[in-house]
Amino acid sequence: MRKDQAAFTIGIEEEYLLVDPSTGELVSETSVQAFVIDSVKRCIGAEVGFATPEFLRAQVEVGTGVCTSIPQLNDCLRQLRTAVGEAAAAQGLAFIASSTHPTAIARKLKHTDAERYSTLANDLQEVARRMVICGMHVHVGVEDREHRIDMLGQLAYFLPHLLVLSTSSPFWEGHDTGLKCYRLSVFDELPRTGLPERFDSWSEYERHLVALTSAGAIEDSSKIWWDIRPHGKFPTLEMRVADVCTYLNDGMAVAALYLCLIGMLQRLRRSNQRWRTYANMLIDENRWRAQRYGADEGLIDFGVGANVPYSALLEEMIEMVMPEAEAFDCVDELLHSRTILQRGTSADQQRAVYNAALEQGSSREQALKAVVDWLVEATVADL
Image 1 (tube, rainbow, N blue to C red):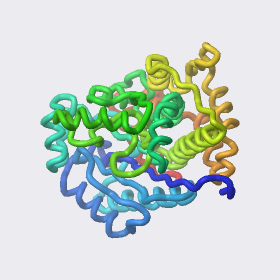
Image 2: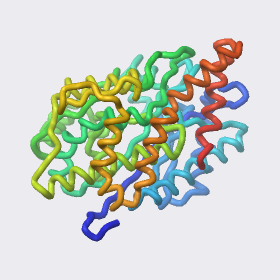
Image 3: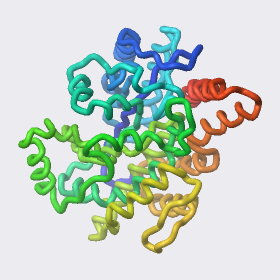
Image 4: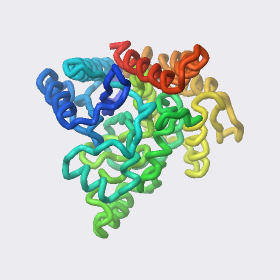
C-alpha cells in the first residue's frame, strides 16, 4: 500500500447450502448444521473468521475476521471454505456456494430453531418461507460517520455493476427463471430492502432509524436490509446486493472492485469532488437489467443517456480505480473481473450445464442434478 493511501479494513460474509451429493437435494437437519459449525469453530481461529447458523437448517454462514489486505481476505475465506467442505464431507455431504438451489421446494424446508429466526418467520410469514437464498456481504471500514453516509448514496450507482459480476441464481424450484439473479426477486419481497435511502447527514439517518425503532417497527438497524447499508455495530459500509460467488476468485474480484470504488470516492472527496448521484428510479432500471440479463444486454450509462455494453463499462471502472488497486495491492483480483466476463458467471455456467445435459438426452430432473454436481465441484475448485 502506498504511504499516501489511507489504511482500510475489509471482511466478507458468505452463505452456503448443505447438500447430499448423491441426490443433489438440500440437507435440512439441525444436527448436520450444528456439526459443520462446531467443526469450523474447532479448526479455525477467531482471527481467521467464524461460522454461524443461518435462517434455514440447510444453510451455514461464514465470515472472515477483520482483514487489512485483499490477499489476507483471500486466505481467510479460503480457510473457511476448506473447513466447511471438510466438515460436510465428514458427514458424507457437500456444500455449494450458490444463491439459489436448482430444485429445492421452499415450503418443504424448515428454519433454524433459534429465537431470532422463529421471530422472523412469524413476522414475515409466507415471505420468510420463500427465503431459500444465499448472499455475499462485503464490509469495508469507513471510520468517519459523515463520510460513510455520504458514500452510501454515491455507491448506490455501482451496485448493479457489482451484481452483474456475481450472479449465481438462475434456477428456482426446478425450473430456469430466465433471470441471472432470481435471489433478489425473492429478497425484495421483504420490507426495507432494495436501494438505500439518501441522507444529507448521519444525524438525519439516525432520526429516520429512531422513528422506526421508537414505533416498534424494528428492533435495530440490523432489520434494514438494503443493498448497501451502514452496519449497525461496526464502522463499515456493507455491500449486500451481490449473489454469493461459486468460485472463490470471483468473490475476491467483486470485493476488490467494491473496495477500490470506495477508495476512489475517498480520493474524489480529498479533491472536494464527488460522484454524481442519480434518482433511485434510474439506478433501479440498471438493477433490474443486471438481475435479468447479467452482462448480456449492457447497462445504462446515465451520464451519456445510452445503453452501453457491460464490457465497456467494466473497462471504464478498471481504469478509474486502478490507482486504488495498485495502492491496495489487488490489481490481479480486480483484473479477474475480465475473466468473469469472458468465462461467464456462475449463473451462465449453471445454465450452460443444464442446457448441455438436455441436449445430450437427459431429463429435466437429470439436467438439474448435473447443475448441482457442477456447483459441488466448482465451489471448491479454486481452494
